Amino acid sequence: MNDKVLWVTGASSGIGAAVANKFASKGWKVAVSARRVELLDELAKHENIFSYPLDVTDAIKLKEVFNKIVNDLGKVDMCILSSGTYERKSEKEIDVNNIRNVIEVNFLGVINSVGAVESYFKNKNSGHIAIVSSPVGYRGLPKSSGYTPSKAALNNFTQGIYFDFIKYNVRVSLICPGFIKTALTDKNEFKMPFLKSPEYAANKIYDGLINKKTFEIIFPIQIAVIYKIFQILPNRIYNYLISKFVNR
Ligand SMILES: NC(=O)c1ccc[n+]([C@@H]2O[C@H](COP(=O)([O-])OP(=O)(O)OC[C@H]3O[C@@H](n4cnc5c(N)ncnc54)[C@H](OP(=O)(O)O)[C@@H]3O)[C@@H](O)[C@H]2O)c1
Image (cartoon, rainbow, N blue to C red; front, top):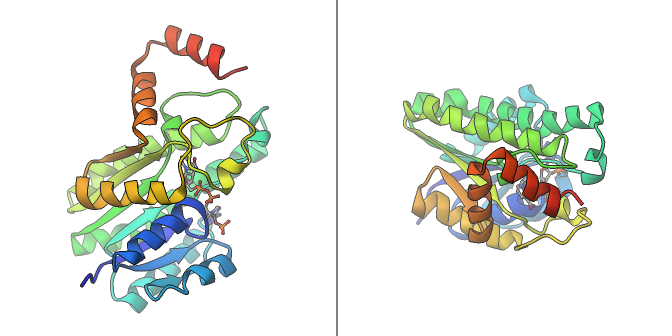
């Protein structure tokens, strides 16, 4: 019997929805949040899933909703923050309004969510914050003027708060999926290498958070190897490779 409680943001579709189902199937009580109420209600047909709609750009509402979840379900042990947005066609040229929106959701929206759980987890001296970011944030990429920088900021933020929370016995994990087939990537017009299903991602995330307990969960292995090499390549070689194989 499992008495654990999870809160998932960005849970109405894609990775977040698959993660919610995975944890619910393992007996966790799962509070699911996003804006599209009807999709959350659909998920909440599972006896262990409960719908809590919100917009992550509204910090005040986020805090209220989080308090309601704690109130309704008795506690929260872990949160998986998976909200995010991306539209490749809006990123080919610099569009400040698009970039502002992407940063507002992908970076500040996650910070709002962490802000909502901070004092609760620190006061109870336990908890786990898992942030879904992306390996694309490791280094700059072409035709990604908003998404890649938002994930770079998120990777850096997550690494930074690891040190701030661990003193309170609160774990922080960084989740970096490769290409996963969701509404977000369905808009890509290029062939995505090593494309995986949301259920594959959910299994990797569950295994990484519950069994492996490493700070960073990056998958699949091919993407992990490629991006880890990208991280350490000198600029001259990185720029050559990206110009030749990606920026075409
Ligand atoms: N798919 C990939 O290949 C991939 C790879 C690396 C990282 N990621 C990251 O994984 C996360 C999930 O993406 P996904 O691929 O599963 O795409 P998705 O199916 O489009 O999921 C995005 C989720 O974010 C929610 N969301 C967007 N704006 C929101 C807002 N303002 N307030 C609350 N929720 C909001 C959406 O719900 P509503 O529209 O209902 O609000 C949806 O549930 C994102 O952070 C993405 O950057 C994805």
